Image 1 (cartoon, rainbow, N blue to C red):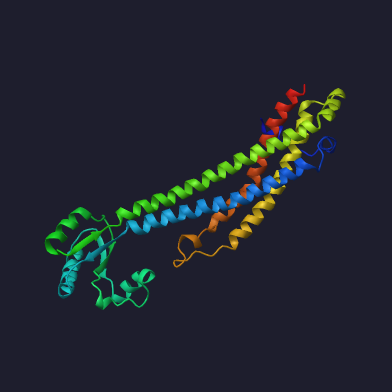
Image 2 (spheres, rainbow, N blue to C red; image 1 turned 90 degrees about the vertical axis):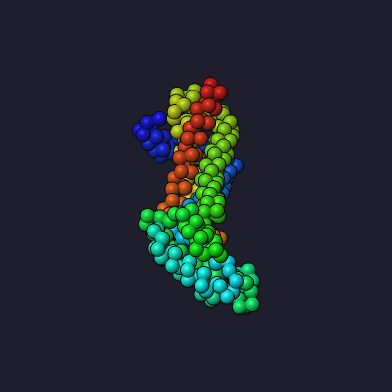
Length: 299
């Protein structure tokens, strides 16, 4: 179908517009379906984009950090911590390393054990934060050296739990895009049913139009225009309502975690604006296909 054909089909024609009733069950169904699906598409898109941001953030932040845990008796902990820091300062690929203070370790444990955790009375290991630099950390080589010089040191380069987290976020992103595709397919199916119902209900009018010389392209164009603009209007309303709902979601915060970062950010706010146009395109193709089939059946 050429661009000229599409323009002709969408060009307003008052004579052809009288073929399709402006109100009725099919009009209400088209408006409701396009609006509801656009509303759901906004949240599916928000989930996909937020999951993508989360995956990228986890991949970048966790890939450049590691943790060293000193499991040693209390009287040896300070000495082994200093020995571990000396090893890390001499290790290529370590940009910086520092031992966490008691206050920092307490804040890490407070979400699970409360803020009044008595660190002095518990055998909590000393944690050392490692920031990786160029050319990258050789975790296997560092483990061998620490095993020889600092017996109580255990290196965690976050690979064991970083990759599942990133994979989970990537899966959520894919799920969001799959949901958008399913929403588009469901919209096409419902609009096809509505168009078929409208064509069948107007079978006698179509027959009269043919008898007076109207071509099938003229008749199909009337249905295509009516359903396309109905879908465009319904999707625009649904998108506005969906974006209003997204604006009411809590803003991203470290305390709230992932569930507070489901909104759009930056250029991402432009993506929902495409939903009404995509809804109209789906309605156009679905109605054109349904009209061609139905008109052949009525021939």
